Image 1 (cartoon, one colour):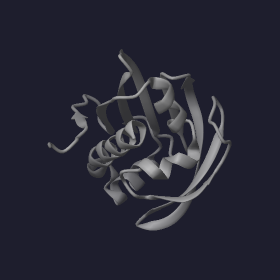
Image 2 (cartoon, one colour):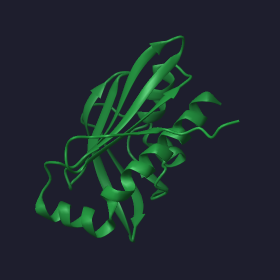
Image 3 (tube, rainbow, N blue to C red):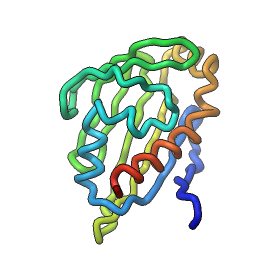
Length: 157
């Protein structure tokens, strides 16, 4: 049996990354997991999220949720949902202004293509410093691919 992997996508914009996977589950099931902030640690491929997550039980446009994280040092970050299209797209951002997006495409037969996108192309100077200091741009594609593989395992179980 071959190892399940997500595809790391080639992107044409600096400070962006993207990965994609096909999940044998309907969009609604996957989106419900993505819209539950308490579930994020269960599929986080970076292993930087702790289980200390607060916010609504289900995200919505404008919703705020916080999570304790550790990248070099422990910290807590508050995210705001900036795009929300039920069963199709969810995006959040925080004070550093980069975004995390999940786009879902229904392929039929209860199969869904899920694309995760990190976008930091238009961020403040201090945020660029943090990305460089943590080497996040180098790590993000691999971490995103791992997250998608974990998301697939959860949704197909």
